[in-house]
Length: 246
Image 1 (cartoon, rainbow, N blue to C red):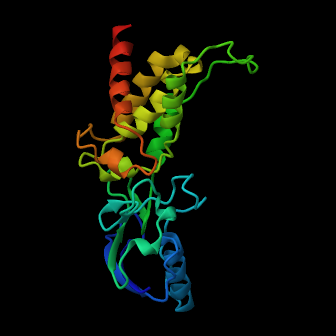
Image 2: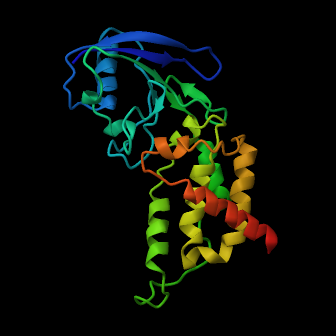
Image 3: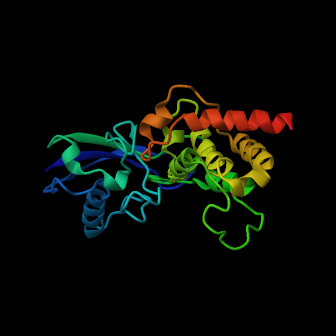
Protein backbone atom coordinates (compact mmCIF):
# COMPACT_ATOMS: atom_id res chain seq x y z
CA UNK A 1 0.00 0.00 0.00
CA UNK A 2 1.15 3.54 -0.72
CA UNK A 3 0.23 6.69 1.20
CA UNK A 4 0.89 10.41 1.20
CA UNK A 5 1.39 11.77 4.71
CA UNK A 6 0.98 15.44 5.56
CA UNK A 7 2.74 15.64 8.93
CA UNK A 8 2.97 18.57 11.33
CA UNK A 9 6.64 19.54 11.72
CA UNK A 10 7.66 21.97 14.46
CA UNK A 11 11.24 22.26 15.69
CA UNK A 12 10.45 23.46 19.20
CA UNK A 13 7.68 25.04 21.30
CA UNK A 14 8.47 28.59 20.17
CA UNK A 15 8.95 28.21 16.40
CA UNK A 16 5.99 28.15 14.02
CA UNK A 17 5.09 24.74 12.65
CA UNK A 18 3.75 23.60 9.28
CA UNK A 19 2.49 20.53 7.45
CA UNK A 20 5.17 18.75 5.39
CA UNK A 21 4.27 16.16 2.75
CA UNK A 22 5.98 12.76 2.57
CA UNK A 23 5.35 9.66 0.48
CA UNK A 24 5.55 6.18 2.01
CA UNK A 25 5.42 3.14 -0.24
CA UNK A 26 5.20 -0.67 -0.06
CA UNK A 27 3.45 -0.59 3.33
CA UNK A 28 1.95 -3.97 4.43
CA UNK A 29 -1.82 -3.73 5.17
CA UNK A 30 -1.26 -5.12 8.67
CA UNK A 31 1.41 -2.54 9.56
CA UNK A 32 0.45 -0.23 12.41
CA UNK A 33 0.37 3.53 11.95
CA UNK A 34 3.42 3.90 14.22
CA UNK A 35 5.30 1.36 12.10
CA UNK A 36 4.62 3.54 9.06
CA UNK A 37 6.19 6.46 10.93
CA UNK A 38 9.15 4.17 11.69
CA UNK A 39 9.50 3.42 7.97
CA UNK A 40 9.33 7.12 7.15
CA UNK A 41 11.92 7.99 9.80
CA UNK A 42 14.31 5.30 8.57
CA UNK A 43 14.10 6.84 5.10
CA UNK A 44 14.58 10.38 6.46
CA UNK A 45 17.66 9.35 8.48
CA UNK A 46 19.08 7.61 5.39
CA UNK A 47 18.71 10.91 3.52
CA UNK A 48 20.35 12.87 6.33
CA UNK A 49 17.09 14.60 7.31
CA UNK A 50 15.56 15.11 10.76
CA UNK A 51 13.19 12.24 11.68
CA UNK A 52 9.63 12.95 12.81
CA UNK A 53 9.34 13.10 16.62
CA UNK A 54 6.36 11.18 18.03
CA UNK A 55 5.46 9.62 21.38
CA UNK A 56 5.31 5.84 21.72
CA UNK A 57 6.15 3.18 24.26
CA UNK A 58 4.23 -0.08 24.84
CA UNK A 59 2.64 -0.29 21.37
CA UNK A 60 -0.05 -2.51 22.90
CA UNK A 61 -2.73 0.11 23.60
CA UNK A 62 -1.84 0.25 27.30
CA UNK A 63 0.49 3.18 27.98
CA UNK A 64 -1.53 5.93 26.24
CA UNK A 65 1.55 7.76 24.94
CA UNK A 66 0.92 7.37 21.18
CA UNK A 67 -1.97 9.80 20.76
CA UNK A 68 -2.03 11.92 17.61
CA UNK A 69 -4.73 13.38 15.36
CA UNK A 70 -5.14 11.48 12.09
CA UNK A 71 -7.49 13.04 9.57
CA UNK A 72 -8.91 15.16 12.38
CA UNK A 73 -9.73 12.16 14.60
CA UNK A 74 -7.99 11.38 17.88
CA UNK A 75 -6.12 8.07 17.37
CA UNK A 76 -7.56 7.82 13.83
CA UNK A 77 -10.87 6.52 12.49
CA UNK A 78 -11.22 3.23 14.43
CA UNK A 79 -13.13 3.03 17.72
CA UNK A 80 -11.70 1.31 20.80
CA UNK A 81 -8.14 1.58 19.47
CA UNK A 82 -5.09 3.70 20.23
CA UNK A 83 -2.84 4.89 17.42
CA UNK A 84 -0.45 1.98 17.98
CA UNK A 85 -3.36 -0.43 17.34
CA UNK A 86 -4.46 1.29 14.13
CA UNK A 87 -3.68 -0.84 11.06
CA UNK A 88 -3.11 0.64 7.62
CA UNK A 89 -5.80 -1.61 6.12
CA UNK A 90 -8.20 0.86 7.76
CA UNK A 91 -7.39 3.33 4.95
CA UNK A 92 -7.84 3.10 1.17
CA UNK A 93 -4.66 2.40 -0.77
CA UNK A 94 -3.23 5.65 -2.14
CA UNK A 95 -4.95 7.79 0.51
CA UNK A 96 -3.58 11.13 1.71
CA UNK A 97 -3.55 11.41 5.51
CA UNK A 98 -3.09 14.53 7.62
CA UNK A 99 -1.24 13.86 10.88
CA UNK A 100 -1.17 16.44 13.67
CA UNK A 101 -0.36 16.60 17.39
CA UNK A 102 -3.05 16.98 20.08
CA UNK A 103 -4.49 20.50 19.82
CA UNK A 104 -5.20 21.92 23.31
CA UNK A 105 -3.72 24.85 25.21
CA UNK A 106 -2.79 22.72 28.26
CA UNK A 107 -0.92 20.35 25.88
CA UNK A 108 1.73 22.61 24.27
CA UNK A 109 3.70 21.16 21.37
CA UNK A 110 7.26 20.17 22.32
CA UNK A 111 8.36 18.99 18.88
CA UNK A 112 6.51 17.72 15.77
CA UNK A 113 3.82 15.31 17.09
CA UNK A 114 5.03 15.35 20.71
CA UNK A 115 3.03 17.40 23.22
CA UNK A 116 3.57 18.11 26.91
CA UNK A 117 0.93 16.14 28.85
CA UNK A 118 2.38 16.71 32.32
CA UNK A 119 -0.79 18.67 33.18
CA UNK A 120 -2.42 15.25 33.66
CA UNK A 121 0.38 14.26 36.06
CA UNK A 122 -0.19 17.39 38.14
CA UNK A 123 -3.94 16.65 38.34
CA UNK A 124 -3.14 13.15 39.61
CA UNK A 125 -0.64 14.55 42.11
CA UNK A 126 -3.38 16.85 43.43
CA UNK A 127 -5.49 13.92 44.67
CA UNK A 128 -5.59 10.91 42.35
CA UNK A 129 -4.27 8.44 44.90
CA UNK A 130 -5.04 6.69 48.19
CA UNK A 131 -2.61 7.91 50.86
CA UNK A 132 -4.10 6.17 53.90
CA UNK A 133 -2.47 2.94 55.07
CA UNK A 134 -4.78 0.11 54.08
CA UNK A 135 -2.72 -2.60 55.83
CA UNK A 136 -2.36 -6.16 54.65
CA UNK A 137 -4.69 -7.73 52.13
CA UNK A 138 -7.93 -8.61 54.00
CA UNK A 139 -9.61 -11.97 53.82
CA UNK A 140 -12.01 -12.37 50.93
CA UNK A 141 -15.42 -10.80 51.60
CA UNK A 142 -14.14 -9.02 54.76
CA UNK A 143 -15.01 -5.74 53.02
CA UNK A 144 -18.05 -6.43 50.82
CA UNK A 145 -18.03 -4.55 47.49
CA UNK A 146 -21.15 -4.73 45.31
CA UNK A 147 -20.35 -6.38 41.99
CA UNK A 148 -21.65 -3.49 39.90
CA UNK A 149 -19.45 -1.07 41.89
CA UNK A 150 -16.39 -3.23 41.26
CA UNK A 151 -17.17 -3.44 37.54
CA UNK A 152 -17.72 0.31 37.23
CA UNK A 153 -14.48 1.01 39.11
CA UNK A 154 -12.61 -1.33 36.75
CA UNK A 155 -14.18 0.38 33.73
CA UNK A 156 -13.03 3.77 35.05
CA UNK A 157 -9.55 2.45 35.85
CA UNK A 158 -9.18 1.47 32.17
CA UNK A 159 -8.41 5.13 31.38
CA UNK A 160 -4.84 5.28 30.05
CA UNK A 161 -4.54 9.07 30.26
CA UNK A 162 -3.76 9.47 26.56
CA UNK A 163 -5.51 12.85 26.27
CA UNK A 164 -7.78 11.95 23.34
CA UNK A 165 -10.74 13.29 25.33
CA UNK A 166 -9.05 16.68 25.63
CA UNK A 167 -7.87 16.76 22.02
CA UNK A 168 -11.31 16.02 20.59
CA UNK A 169 -13.33 18.28 22.93
CA UNK A 170 -14.27 21.70 21.45
CA UNK A 171 -13.47 23.22 24.86
CA UNK A 172 -10.30 21.23 25.51
CA UNK A 173 -11.97 19.76 28.59
CA UNK A 174 -10.30 17.13 30.78
CA UNK A 175 -13.57 16.22 32.51
CA UNK A 176 -13.63 12.61 31.23
CA UNK A 177 -10.06 11.98 32.40
CA UNK A 178 -10.66 13.50 35.85
CA UNK A 179 -14.04 11.77 36.14
CA UNK A 180 -12.50 8.36 35.43
CA UNK A 181 -9.80 8.87 38.07
CA UNK A 182 -12.27 10.13 40.68
CA UNK A 183 -14.76 7.33 39.92
CA UNK A 184 -12.30 4.48 40.29
CA UNK A 185 -11.61 5.53 43.90
CA UNK A 186 -15.07 6.80 44.87
CA UNK A 187 -16.62 3.42 44.12
CA UNK A 188 -14.26 1.38 46.31
CA UNK A 189 -13.93 1.36 50.14
CA UNK A 190 -10.22 2.26 50.09
CA UNK A 191 -10.98 5.57 48.38
CA UNK A 192 -13.73 6.76 50.71
CA UNK A 193 -11.46 8.25 53.40
CA UNK A 194 -10.17 11.01 51.04
CA UNK A 195 -13.27 11.24 48.88
CA UNK A 196 -14.06 14.89 49.62
CA UNK A 197 -10.52 16.25 49.33
CA UNK A 198 -9.79 14.23 46.19
CA UNK A 199 -12.55 15.63 43.99
CA UNK A 200 -12.03 19.20 45.19
CA UNK A 201 -8.26 19.15 44.66
CA UNK A 202 -8.33 17.40 41.28
CA UNK A 203 -10.98 19.74 39.86
CA UNK A 204 -9.14 22.79 41.22
CA UNK A 205 -5.92 21.59 39.56
CA UNK A 206 -7.79 20.91 36.31
CA UNK A 207 -9.02 24.49 36.25
CA UNK A 208 -5.55 25.78 37.17
CA UNK A 209 -4.03 23.93 34.19
CA UNK A 210 -6.39 25.76 31.81
CA UNK A 211 -8.64 22.90 30.69
CA UNK A 212 -12.11 23.99 29.56
CA UNK A 213 -15.52 23.00 30.86
CA UNK A 214 -17.46 19.95 29.62
CA UNK A 215 -18.93 20.69 26.19
CA UNK A 216 -21.70 18.04 26.49
CA UNK A 217 -21.01 16.82 22.94
CA UNK A 218 -20.00 13.27 23.99
CA UNK A 219 -17.03 13.57 21.62
CA UNK A 220 -14.72 12.47 24.46
CA UNK A 221 -16.57 9.17 24.89
CA UNK A 222 -16.69 8.60 21.12
CA UNK A 223 -12.92 9.03 20.65
CA UNK A 224 -11.71 7.41 23.89
CA UNK A 225 -9.73 4.27 22.96
CA UNK A 226 -10.91 2.63 26.18
CA UNK A 227 -14.58 3.67 25.78
CA UNK A 228 -14.76 5.48 29.13
CA UNK A 229 -18.41 6.48 29.58
CA UNK A 230 -19.57 10.05 30.16
CA UNK A 231 -21.61 8.57 33.02
CA UNK A 232 -18.42 8.99 35.05
CA UNK A 233 -18.67 12.76 34.45
CA UNK A 234 -22.12 12.65 36.05
CA UNK A 235 -20.58 10.83 39.04
CA UNK A 236 -17.79 13.42 39.18
CA UNK A 237 -20.38 16.19 39.41
CA UNK A 238 -22.25 14.33 42.16
CA UNK A 239 -19.01 13.79 44.08
CA UNK A 240 -18.25 17.52 43.86
CA UNK A 241 -21.74 18.53 45.06
CA UNK A 242 -21.45 16.00 47.91
CA UNK A 243 -18.03 17.37 48.89
CA UNK A 244 -19.35 20.92 49.02
CA UNK A 245 -22.33 19.86 51.13
CA UNK A 246 -20.17 18.19 53.82
